[in-house]
Length: 136
Length: 136
DNA sequence: TTACGCAATGTAATGATATTACATATCAAG
DNA sequence: CTTGATATGTAATATCATTACATTGCGTAA
Ligand SMILES: [Zn+2]
Ligand SMILES: [Zn+2]
Ligand SMILES: [Zn+2]
Ligand SMILES: [Zn+2]
Image 1 (cartoon, rainbow over the protein chains, first blue to last red):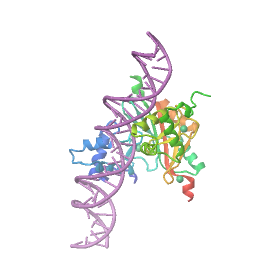
Image 2 (spheres, rainbow over the protein chains, first blue to last red):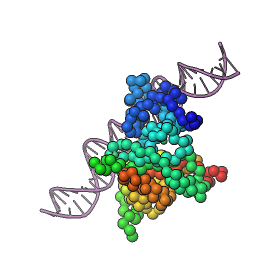
Image 3 (cartoon, chains in turn brown, red, blue, cyan):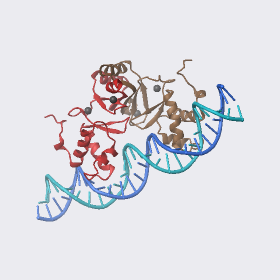
């Protein structure tokens, strides 16, 4: 198995709890929502959540949605560390669609190259209405 | 002059004060930083800033940087309402580079079309190191 | 002119998100 | 066992944003 793949066995107790919570959810969760869902499991403070999220993001298992201040489990087994990934977020049902596009990544890379900018983390988020909600 | 162009004369007193503050800054400002800079001008509460920012964003004169929870004046005379604009944000000097790319916009539009997603607002933000800071 | 309607503004309180600081626990290497 | 690195616990605080309600300013219809 490639080194960038991880399962729950790599995670500490708190990290696994947070990861499982995000995986069980049908949409993004705020840190405080995660905290509330894990109170019975012994969580008491925001920092426990934020620390776990930090590690999970570094592993590519979880993404932060900047426009929502919320977190979502990666749709793939795990995103590459530098992977430029994009999200479509439905304002109506709250679902998140994660996708990648080589051309998208390449265009941003091209702009960076011509300007000398060295990108470290890229955020691409589309807010709108998903097909299902549009039909309804 | 096209209807989507605006100058200070279209703005109320508070809106103009906030807009001038952002234009005078050399980087993005948080709402509370703007508030502090406008206390002498009579500002007392965050809501005064947020209300002005809301209007300025609607006019395309100001952009919100989601990954910073901060605001910056548009680099152009004014961005189109639906314009898909991208930002490169230097982690070192804090400067923000605003740009557009038709192909970028087109790729996102293509994904939306094939999936039936109707985008309403798109965020593209690259965090990294600008050419000048890289050299230094 | 006066009365009304509407947009903008003022003010206080509260809610939501995130970090700092410091103490304690766990565990593997030496 | 001692040490160092990583993870965790807890409290306090910092930062960002909204809700609720009162007031003001101004154009317009009666
Ligand atoms: Zn992913
Ligand atoms: Zn939907
Ligand atoms: Zn712009
Ligand atoms: Zn720089």
